[in-house]
Length: 417
Image 1 (spheres, one colour):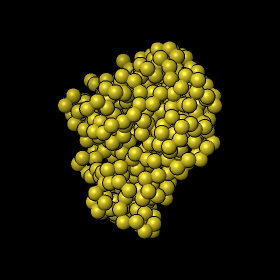
Image 2 (image 1 turned 45 degrees about the horizontal axis):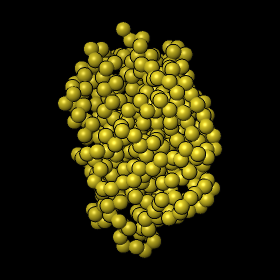
Image 3 (image 1 turned 30 degrees about the vertical axis):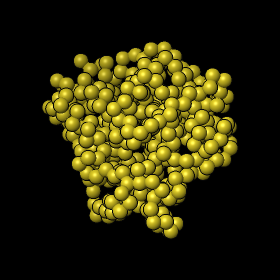
Image 4 (image 1 turned 135 degrees about the vertical axis):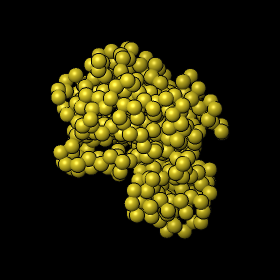
């Protein structure tokens, strides 16, 4: 069996599983946020149960429109807050919060070999820890909160192998954008993406979170990595419960095997209006930008901020560009502060926000007007994703975004003098 099949078999009481089978799967964590939780809460109350199946296995994070951007957002957050306090579940309020897919791993709420479902499409992020994690609708999440089970079809698995050594300025964002550009936004439709190869072994955990996060942008049901020394080092002081590490069988059957030579990959940019519309940054000429966003559940971790600071240090943001930097959690914010990264950003003319999803989904903290262009480390660049449907969003890694903020047009960091 593949890695995903091993995990799902263990959580459904089966000795073996194959793609296409329907199973009831026991979950280890159920997640929702300030947009999706209110719907789940309403449906939960219709079921007629008083308590969630296990308060320690349910978590709600108000992160999309928080700090509350308007009255409607405040009402949503209030409903989540009241339910969370009533049910005594895991809950992250302003001041200790962050972006859900950043704080769950750093808080030890997700561990290897587990099954995690969330009412957010980027729940697939936790595959970086060797867990099966996937997004579902709010009504499915309501049922999961009540019963601790989900009903699903076992997905086929595509094996992606990345050969060679990563070049300078190349990271997880470039690998996943290159992959999506190759296979398309439906290239892994309802499939698990299992990542392998020398480049993956060398990739740091933050880069792995980025790749797993964007599996959904290829249509994937999940993205997953094998657990190795880096994974175990990451969770060593975070794990508060037992967990099981699973390995794919040597003779596992894959729907497809796709291989890449990463030594040939340059920093990638996804041009409007799809994550699959990718080009090497050096192929873009004089694309003027009005805004640069560095953050989100995709690239708001400490290594991402370090990379941006490396480019911005001693330099200044173009006066015609708004550069918005958003740490993924309070912990990351504090670490960035201690390392002097925040000072570097402010001296460079950038603004630093409290942890929030904010502009990624066109929420707040950086909405685009008609005709404006933004380079962003977020995960989607659909029409109107960050504001006006007449605006444009380009996706890139933090170094490319920072370099572009300095020049005022999309450029490779290696060209910054």
